[in-house]
Image (cartoon, rainbow, N blue to C red; front, side):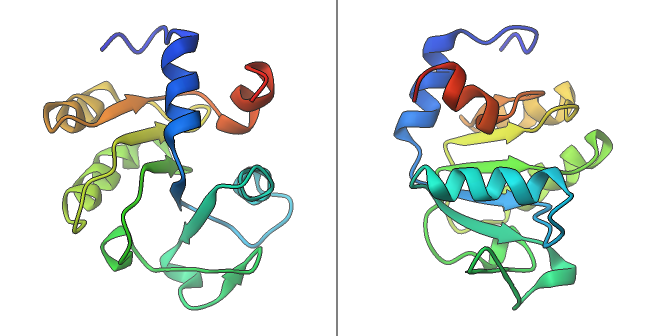
Length: 142
């Protein structure tokens, strides 16, 4: 996939077909972007599972935090990644350890690793990078 451009129809389809999101790099700190994005996604009706090993067992926005993706025991439609771009490969490795793979992996603003994305795409997972669903939802009128 060309990760320099994503058609609006693709983004719209991802955001309207997704019900459950695992948010990797979730933070309990209100000043962190992941905190605000998680709140937005919850308000929009998504089920959001926060993932952060340092916060495992605690709650963020009333949702119990898990340590890693493999700890999630329900199917997840999308992985939303709030990690440094150089950690995207590790996130992809963790996705492959899940009981069932998500349909989508979404790298937040500034999160792009084309080689990691290619590995996920080889497994049939659609990857979007350097975008924010909390920006795309209102932009597309969703």
